[in-house]
Image (cartoon, rainbow, N blue to C red; front, side):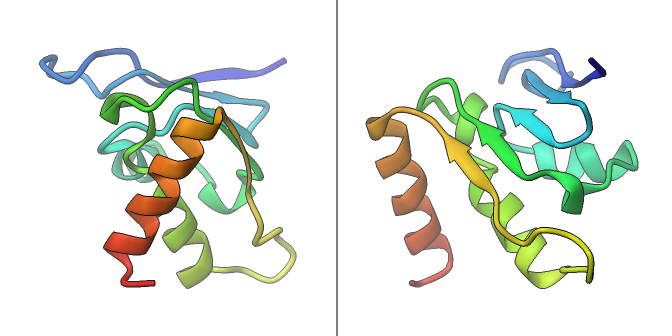
Length: 105
């Protein structure tokens, strides 16, 4: 199993909020600023096919809409466009609301 730490901090820290990439395709938590952190670390974002969100706090889920936006707008042939999101119902509703408000859906 390959584990890559994207961030290990919290919102008031200088470090990015906690996020872990597992086996290059499973992302655990998607905090604010995480997409940029992954780009800076040269992570192949198109390879992420599963996002696990532990709970609704901003430092765990607020970049989820941007992950989906990135994959849609920078799609590369040969990759899966879909991303499975594993979370609880409250967080699912929060992420769906974020997506609809951010992207006017």
